[in-house]
Image (cartoon, rainbow, N blue to C red):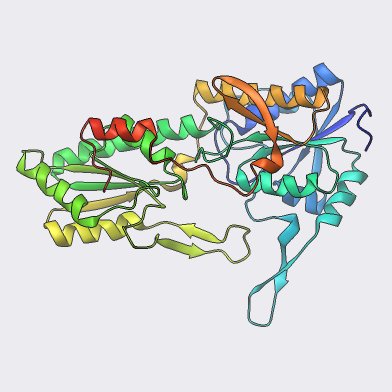
Length: 368
């Protein structure tokens, strides 16, 4: 595809897990493509699966009207379909068989006459997009994830809404912990990054915050629960990331999804910790796993604006024919970096992050 060729048809897809704000991006990408570029837009259904199986549909003005406030994605999504490693069946032992179907994807892109594709997703989606970049597809990335773990951007849309949701849940459990004089653990998402737990833990005034980046000492966590009781605080609220692990120990794995590009599913650390704390302190202890409630619902106003600004920047990049870039937020401004520079990486909480120092200054136990 020649660099000077007019962009007449744009594909847009949402990949990976859903999060609040996806529809806001689809809306602005479609409307801005029509008004700014005079281009057609095709919605690619169910992430990379739509490219693999040639499932696409036209999006016009009416299709994307009144979706700004809706959670989820009108295009659907999946976190399993990686064209470079796509599950096509099972062997005689029941294990998945994988095949590189990238050529099939390229055929479908050519058949649909897509001049560019806007990929809305997290690190897995950007890794898939980078694979297509190397095969000559003109791509633009828009970063989304409630985990806030994409490299090169200060913030991803969906994160702020997830923090608000998680904080509200922690607040509600806080009152129950206080009423029943219990140690209450609330397990939050984030995989190997503790941003969501750190922010919502601080916002809710959690007494203990456990994140993957700081291995915790069980004895110190138990000592904090006991100490609070001795001071007359007859309850303890613990915000724990699903990826948190004890010093010298391993993360708790809920299950392994063998046909997924990211097969490890973390989960259950709160239940393990609750039992250990109860056995050591003899305090009544309960665990709650928030799960997918953190990913659902309507986006807060900030995420609606951020998602819209990201999508608009994506169309600007296409108009300027700046290909193979991902939109990022840096110091309040939307910029762009090469998609390949963020693929296959995770942005975790650095040990010197100011929020950690802030938490310690108000007496929050970080488990170490």
